[in-house]
Image (cartoon, helix red, strand yellow):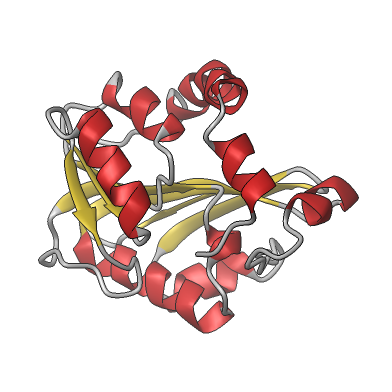
Length: 191
């Protein structure tokens, strides 16, 4: 979804990629992602680069055409890169062992589209598969970075009910106000 120039520069910077590379491996170590992972909305690919080091098979879905081409150029030999919306995924049911998304949900313009992403994640996951990720929480600096952007911050308190409505169980949400919300949910059934 639309990002202003400063935000695009920051998210495509080596500083951002370095920060992600320092933090994400520890977060990933806490989650059993299985053997076939889908990443929704990787943007410039800082998270994709880290995921490629820890998951056996990675598919990425990016809505922005320019970012999709960038991802294909950077990772096309190592990840299956698709252009499309997380609210209408071009994948069959029960395919992935895990679906992840990192700091992208706030770029989805409406709660209804976010809910469609949650429902699609449940659809494409295998029984017992995990949907997990992080998203940013509102702060003054975060708001400044998003001037002119699409910014629809996920309400951490309401997130468990939304994920359960999408078909998930064992929902865990941990909010760090003015920083991040971490979430994990499981599709019913056995892996």
